[in-house]
Length: 162
Image (cartoon, rainbow, N blue to C red; front, side, top):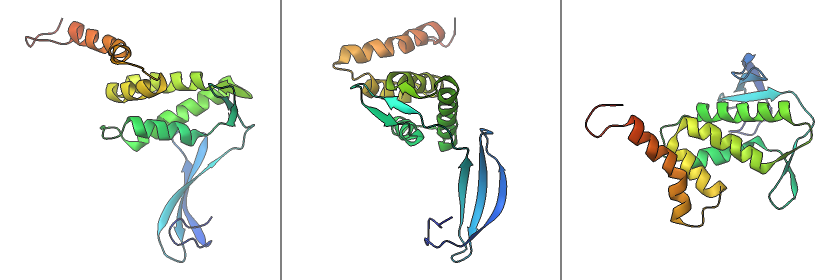
């Protein structure tokens, strides 16, 4: 394994254990040249899943794309990278279980929105506004309406809850 810091190919494994998702192995490594430590993950190679985009084109599934979208949506929000990694793994696992060759990008987007809705409402609305390509403020308000109505039902204006 090439060290991400000094680029030398001389390391040793310090620790190996099953990752939190139980579908990969986490290895803690130390570079023998610069003495810095880094983590790698080993996953089983599977049949590549392809994503069918809105325009009909097909691209290889990339978990990094999901993580990138989550990171962008959760920017400046109190959400840990570990939570986003767990979400990404859950989505990836669900797709592997449900689809053998191809999956629509709309389905993946819906899975991401479902996860974000439970995690952080602001991140959810951010993702939905880009994913659903809101054209005007009305569409934005329609997406916010369930949250706003929820605040009226469960929230309080006088210190009590219903």
